[in-house]
Length: 402
Ligand SMILES: Nc1nc2c(c(=O)[nH]1)N[C@H]1C(S)=C(S)[C@@H](COP(=O)(O)OP(=O)(O)OC[C@H]3O[C@@H](n4cnc5c(N)ncnc54)[C@H](O)[C@@H]3O)O[C@H]1N2
Ligand code: MOO
Image 1 (cartoon, rainbow, N blue to C red):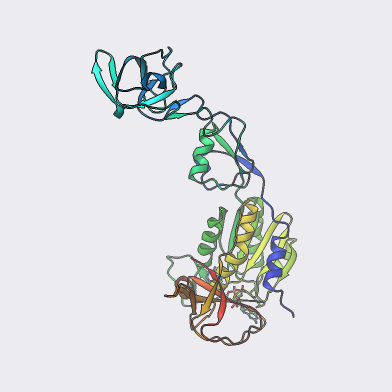
Image 2: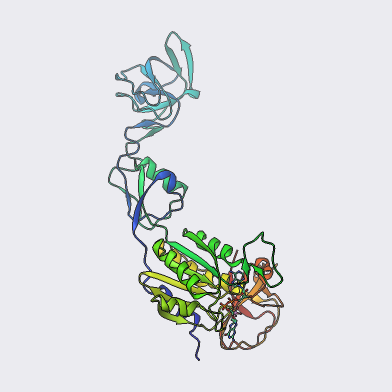
């Protein structure tokens, strides 16, 4: 059977994936979320002409020739406007952030004054008009569009939205992904294992990949290789409102690989199953109503590589995020044999050589059960189907993992 090319599988998986609905969250909960609507300024900042320095609000004409003495007629700390007007020969003691009083048109910084006592100062430097004064609306004006829809709320964006007087923000609802591990042989980490059992490891990495693009994860635990048990877990995922259901294992063709039958029995419309990729050939994708279902192969490296390539961009889209894989040009650190019909994702160490070029060296053994090499790898060499044998130093493409 012809296997579906990776690019086509990805295009089908993402074909109608759009940002989900909006929800309102408080600023305290909004970090790293994605704006569902633009943020418009609800106020003008600064709302008054404000001093940018500690010193004296004066009339520039009065200190055109120095030294000259001025009378202090009052104070203007931040938050307390001076109620009067600065007249000829007068000054108001002012602090950073305070409104500049009527009559004054510049700020004489305190370093350029001498305090004389009896409410008088001596100006020892001249200052031009408008110095150290922040004009009304210097930062933004009420009605300005400050942040675009789709912006991820980083530190600066959050403080700006707060300054614009928004206590809450409309953000894209985080997609919910339900993860179901299947297999009679699996027990959770920390278990005492029987001779034929292993630890269920895939879900942790898959959850981390989902979380890295802002998705919420519902871990439905380990389900035995029985149709009813798998169907029950799928129903739990649906009733929890999962946007995506990820199953781990049982995607292949063995007698205990039940996922396809159970999902189609539950009404899944299969989109594709089995792709031209190594690792990850048995990848399955379908839809159960509005819920997308991804059947990940059980082999741990296949599970995680498929999550990087398929689950991550899908969840990013559903969460309104931009996501582009970090693909780079590199040179091969060793010769490689010709490839077959499956696009290969080969665990490798990519290092920057002395000439500044990236060199990617594959691990010698690439079995898809070997998590250790995946953890040691920082890149996957991507080899196209039927790529010819390559020499050390030949150009290649790498997908950076970290
Ligand atoms: N006759 C064929 N056999 C297989 C084919 C094939 O095309 N024809 N494909 C192989 C490929 S490629 C893969 S990948 C595996 C994937 O098969 P399944 O998705 O059915 O996975 P399982 O059989 O359930 O498990 C495979 C392996 O992974 C372990 N596993 C499963 N789940 C977890 C988990 N959550 N954490 C850690 N390890 C897990 C499981 O114990 C098995 O060792 O099929 C090949 N076979
Ligand atoms: O997807 Mo499988 O991991 O090629 O063994």
